[in-house]
Length: 313
Ligand SMILES: Nc1ncnc2c1ncn2[C@@H]1O[C@H](COP(=O)(O)OP(=O)(O)OP(=O)(O)O)[C@@H](O)[C@H]1O
Image (cartoon, rainbow, N blue to C red; front, side, top):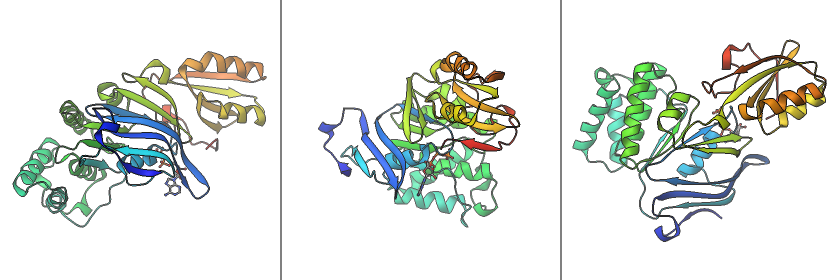
């Protein structure tokens, strides 16, 4: 099993990569389970889900940076140019010019077009004055721009982005959205881990919701109601009931507050869960629709205070 190269005939005409029931385990710890998906030319897939749900591992699996421990990864037999933006980019002791031109060379881009492309991207992202500055002096946002440029250079067939907007100001976010849209329209397949609904709404053709290493919900055509979140704050539930709610497939995050629990739930299941809370003898403190604005289901969502504890993995 594991990584296999197949003839084009075995993948659809526009399919670049296909995962079939793929899983990943590190020792005894299972990180991904039963993942089946196709990555298609000119299509953008957004991966959403709370921290630790497996988004980065899935991106690495698609990229071929890690192998599935079960199931199958099929990849188009042609040479695929893949750009990968890791979640964290180290402040390397080079200049953007040194770094970007050498990664372009590794990718087989000729010197002249590499330089031209680098200069265009630096300008589009407001970094034209920093081509020869040391990256270990850069801010997080500046490093992220270089991280993105190295992946976008050479017109990749496949672009894998782990939290691409991380650290970028509004203007840079807009420029990036424009660049990604151009690449997608030119046929680049994009798969991104993301929590900003603006990016999802503008560019994603499909949204996959991940929980505990599995895809638990899929919606075509961007962020649909089925993937919007509502936060329910409840009180007076015993530990058993809380544990059951935390494991409910529609509850993506449960955290303890002072004398209350916050449950982040899929909006479509809100009524059902509210009824179950009351049936279990709990009381409802508040119901806060997140309006799909923040899918990062951690403590920062909707101005919450630090959680005292968390339930679930
Ligand atoms: N190399 C590794 N060895 C062991 N466990 C790992 C390894 N890489 C990831 N994990 C575990 O796999 C789980 C999923 O991690 P992953 O980084 O894929 O999630 P994520 O959804 O991208 O989270 P975040 O939004 O915080 O980046 C986590 O529990 C993590 O600790």
